[in-house]
Image 1: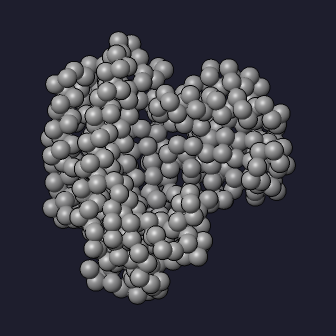
Image 2 (image 1 turned 120 degrees about the vertical axis):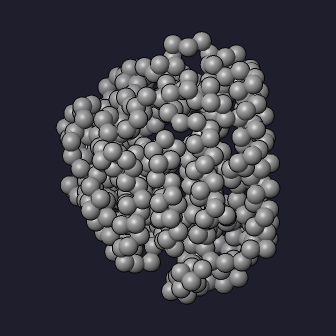
Length: 438
């Protein structure tokens, strides 16, 4: 059969899509680039936010109109199966914990919504980016108490993959030529928590010890589990193979709202983790997530969030307006006036954009090595340095230097990227020795 696939959402969802395509290709199916040319359409969906879920509903409706067998995968079948049936009553559904059985959905039209206890690591892959390999380290959420989050319904019970198994997957991809390894999960901080504490530091130490020239991007982590191991984790980040990039969601600057959200930590815990990392890596790139307009958030709570942002000055903030998700405790709360929420979102977005630009301007004049790992919408090369800063190279073409290690000089800054000129193409050996020495 000819199979067309679309994938949306987080890195874990992208990994699932790559695994699904790898399994299907290994069974003789052809992967095509246009839905019109397919016999079967597979869409990996995301439902973390209401606007994203609405987009999925619309896209499923459109794809159903093409008259092919439609397989809806990802989080929507587990989180909002009713919306799937409304958009496409005849769709085949497969949950995120059953991706290893995608062939049954495609070949036989069998829906699988229960958890399947198969290990995804080691499966065939069709990687979207030849430089990047996404490695899931666990499944599900260990905390499971957040009042607003639908992930506990969509991703199932928590399970960490054995350290040796994760390391083996990284080694496999490095040997295949991957230069960036993305370690991902619903919460990296919870890795190995079955042992009584986070084993993320041990995981990073193990993966960093694998031979080869490659870089590691560590995914999002809950402050709750990071705090007890913050010292050793920050030490592990000093490996020259690990991008100095920390994705640490705070969600609110108000301890009252954090309690209402059932997040399990305080603002002070978040700040201490950031301080620990920045004490060892002053130029650390910090990304966080904030929800605006939680039903119990008042003007004072929002002001506390602004105060935290101004104090900590994250490089990136993923700002989400609150929308109740089905089946979550917060669904029972009375929502705030949408006009109020929209106004707060605009205020915080403006502040975040200003801070991001000011942070970026500190990099003007920086010269160093970066990996061209992406091509922009207009064909421009986008590179990342060891701090995982996105660097747009203005005087080169992406198709000519994709996958290259380059030396660049930053000449300008935008809120969420640096603008640079290409000095020269370098060898990975040369860049590696310089990075190791620094």
